[in-house]
Image (cartoon, rainbow, N blue to C red; front, side, top):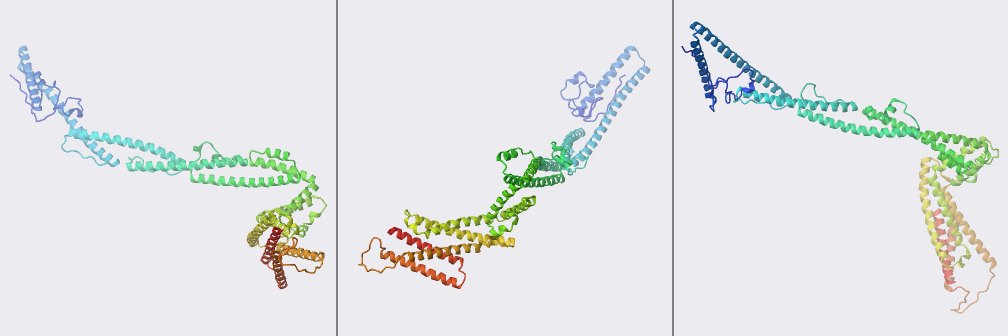
Length: 580
């Protein structure tokens, strides 16, 4: 009796061995294992379908049962025992198929759960990564969908991990920069995945903070170097924590906040003020030392030796100069008379520079005292300081006045030469050169007078007091000098005329033939020129006399008259010199 087992087979049914993974089932129907319920005759077939595979399983089962029947027949096993054995076979086959069905159903459930999980995770990742949500191709099978979703999930998870790692590194760098600058780091909520825009903004923020740190570090380095230099120059060690941080070698130990940078700027300004104060005191002490050196006639070798032993800082140099000043003060007190006499020489120099009159000088009565005491020395020191301050305040004007005085002296010398009767014996064009030099000096004097007048007017407006030269206002002094020169020339002219009248005897005029002229007698041309000159000078004198009767002659009129007279006399003298 044959035992037949029937299987219900559906189209495209897929079978799976135990422990096979879901991904290994894809394409199972295309290349299944040939050892699975396949006889040798079917394993050689090129293309195997699920129907063929199912039929081969039924055929193999029937053949196996037929073989069992033959064995049992040969053994003589009775029907009831055969039934029990066939029941066992049926039981084993049913258990096998039930187990396989259970495993396949579990696999299907896992795939469905995997698809749901992947969809959920993909949706969340697409939202977190700010990418477009992944769309599934509905024409694909469940295994293809699961595989596609799983691969996509792996790709987005990798992008997430890479972005989170990049965020971690950027945040560490940003935190370090912001800690140095004491500013708030770029905020990204913790636990969330940053978008590409946030990563870009974070990078830009780091770039800005890096540049800001570079600028602040540069400012800090400059301030630190200047503060160190100031401390070295004034010879002082850092006293407080700010100064210690400012000169510290470790730049990272100093917080580059705007407040700290501002504090360093204030510290630098304070140290510079301290340095300037020390320099001012140092210069004052130097001036005193130099003044005492000059007063005490200290040898140049001793001065040079003291100047060479200068300290490495301002404070040290100041201490050395103060020590030298104390030594010189002691020496000065031991040589009061000589020191006071030297100070008087210095006073005379300042009085001369300031054009002091004798009356102004006599106002300082201590100058003429012979009681050489410390009080007298103190009075002389005060007077020297006063005159020095006066000279420093008016130095530009006083130097210009001194230049005018020098030019005036030269001009007066040339004027005297022009009135000298012996000048005709000097040949070689000297008279013409002197006339040019005199005209040049006269122009220079006029220019200096105008410049000084404007400067003095401005000075008097600022100071609220008159500017005096030899006890007079400058323009009054200039006018008096020109008037004195004019009067001197008039006196000299009158003296020469009177002397000539006294020494020349009266002679009866003798007629001479026309055209005859002795060698020693001036020609009619010269007499005419001389007469013209004399008449012109007479008219000028008349004009001056009439002007002096009416009142004071203006400075411009005096200068014009002197200039005209000098020019005419020079022309007349040069003509006579040529005829001679």
